[in-house]
Amino acid sequence: MAGKLYLVATPIGNLEDITFRALKILKEVDLIGAEDTRHSIKLLNHFEIKTPMTSYHEFNKVDKAKYLINEMLSGKNVAIITDAGTPGISDPGEEIVKQCFEAGIEVSSIPGPAACITALTMSGQNTRRFAFEAFLPYDKKERAIVLSELKNETRTIIIYEAPHHLLGTLKELYESVGDRSITLCRELTKVHENAEKTTIKEAIEKYSSVEPKGEYVLVIAGKTFQEVRQEEIDSFAEMTVEEHMEMYLSQGIDKKEAMKMVAKDRGVSKRDIYDIICK
Image 1 (tube, rainbow, N blue to C red):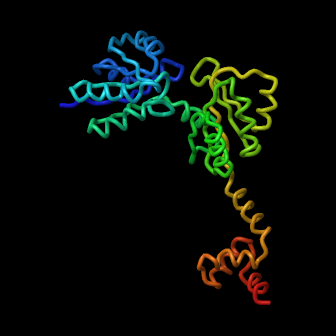
Image 2 (image 1 turned 90 degrees about the vertical axis):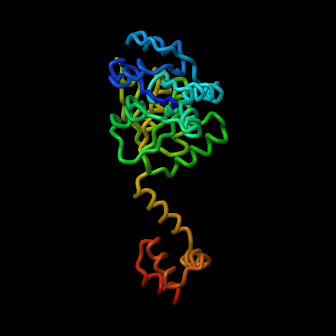
């Protein structure tokens, strides 16, 4: 009978955030795949966990996943842990999950700490809808595409960033999304945990003279629906009513419905559009 894969969330700073269930699983499985065994051995030693470890990281994730799949097919249970937080979120954990589904191996996720959710809930920003971007792509073209997409994002945006890249990223965000409300969370769950709610422009001014310290999670307000609507109205205002009508008529929409849509777009009555079109 095949074994099982457990994705075990581990503390992002404070070791007391480990769950009883996580400790139980880590002690009971046959093997632990760790992003950095040198880092994770400290966690295992602290809780007196003797389970064997093997490396499972970004640079060996495909081949090592195949090895771990074979171990599970032989009946062994395997746990995956990341350096901090929940496996599969901004780390190579997703690769082995895909391979498990292909091999018919059961997967279970043991919930626990996640830096993105921790930062979001303490940010003071809107938490109902959010877009998690993790670290922005390093490839310049891909990065530009992502930043361009964020320009009109109405959900709260969550981004991870290292201290030495913080100022540059803030400047890129300012150019792409403008001066929005932002909460900079750092050293989450640690002694010097801090959440600073400000604006992107003010953050740039601060970190142009203050050296950033610690790993950051940036929680950025999305564009409001009112702003989106106003931009639509402004864009339509640049068109003549005739051009606006033609935009809809060319899509096969009948004249009566097109007039109604133009009136709605421009925030005026249908009669106003009728008077212009039929004068």
